[in-house]
Image (cartoon, rainbow, N blue to C red; front, side, top):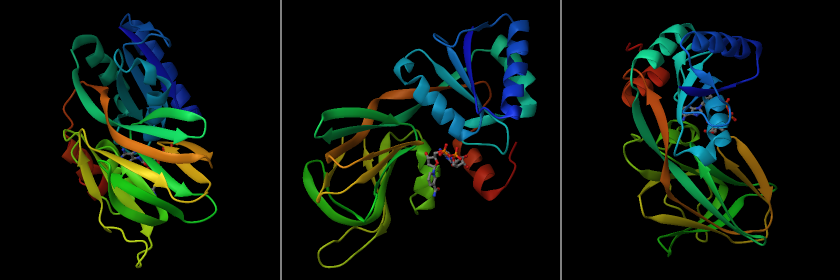
Length: 265
Ligand code: NAD
């Protein structure tokens, strides 16, 4: 098996990465940072987001595994003291591959068009003032937004920023995008629904910039500032990210454990 490792860079994660290399060598795995079959991130969910963006162009060939050095994460669902168990299972069992939906973000700027993929979410905010934007759903005017920002999340991202702004938690088997508001201003000119909405596959939302404004775009952990955005189209990507599961850990158990504190294993 060819594997790659990305660690968070702190001494605990680096130490675990070294241990992983020793365990993997004992099992005859090949360390290959360029063409891996399995990418193991060691750190937290943020490290897994980094790993995803590092191997973005190889999503067809790689599956991800996340090891957490602190509390259990959403993507990072193996804990540091389970490393031996993980490597044993990798050597002896076929993984169950779960595929999660991704968000496609198409920026229309003065420089032309650029595409991005998000595993958690795409967030749009104004840099110096409130964001002013028109939202069209499937090419029809939906609402005029003025406020702090908009979060457009994938189902697996629904437990991240989306949840903090009052969005619903969605099961990742539902290919969809959730649009949630951050502090919208509502008056006679700007009127928004107030609740988040969920778009299914093959629907799209266009966010059209309604004034000259400097915008902060966040694609997962990656922040970009631009003032030449005309419009942004978001939809469910045709691509999926694959996670290698060597033991069952149902999504709702993860939600219960992370947010309600019940240890269900
Ligand atoms: P990070 O790695 O420190 O992540 C921030 C927190 O979000 C961590 O506790 C992490 O475990 C958790 N997290 C990440 N993805 C998650 C998921 N899918 N479900 C549940 N929890 C999740 O910080 P970073 O490297 O900057 O990560 C960027 C992420 O941080 C963004 O994708 C966004 O979701 C999140 N974020 C959250 C808020 C908020 O909740 N107010 C604000 C900004 C960013």
